Image (cartoon, rainbow, N blue to C red; front, side):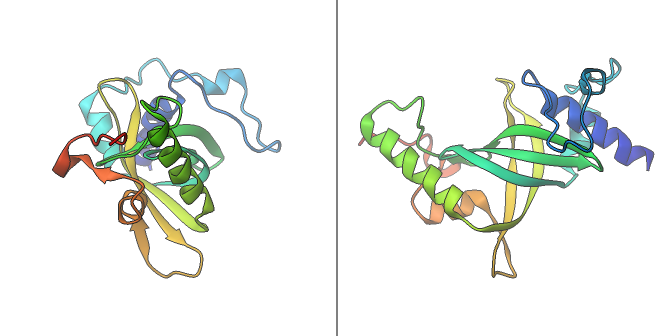
Length: 176
């Protein structure tokens, strides 16, 4: 029980980040004091990060930001809801806001429409970690409505041409 609580507190420290948590349910509003991360939690400590990467966090898709970033409501602990932006690990997708060319922007918009058009029944986040730039990264495992199998969202995006694995090919040039 104590280990799970420390995982939730450490995850809260990662997810709260600069944007803060948002109460999504009027029955359980989050006060400013509850939003503060305890001073003894240091999300950069390796032992906390290792605990987080081994944990599953249930989430609900809010929207797709671009071809490789999603915004979710994360549920790391009962009655705890946090809004977070997650960069999907292992893929590079076309950007919408930071597009280099019009072609990339259009591809990014199609990727957003694809993700938002998926009928996601369930979503779980794995391997959550902060990258060097301070962005939250992870894997999103989804189960689509009417399916009995889970699939990684990054695989769905890659299989449908909305993202490419940068592990094999490097960062793609979407403008060619």
